[in-house]
Length: 107
Image (cartoon, rainbow, N blue to C red):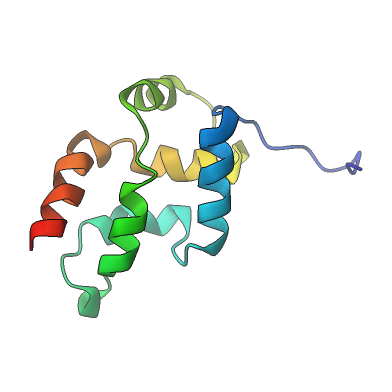
């Protein structure tokens, strides 16, 4: 049952990928607005992501098609579903994100 006063968030992504990302993000300890900054910090002790968090994130990296969809979005990020907010936060770092997250496995 939805509340008539509360506006529902816009959803860009769909299907099972969004469902899996939503389940994952419910337990992920980093908020959407913090994610981009944490991706640039190398050491966990300095506020960066742990090895486990990086490994988990690698499973949910948006596809190139997803990245293009998010790049084309012109509205406010805050109005999007939480999954889409995370993906919007990562669309720029993910230009190099796949390589970065892959490199982190070898370090």
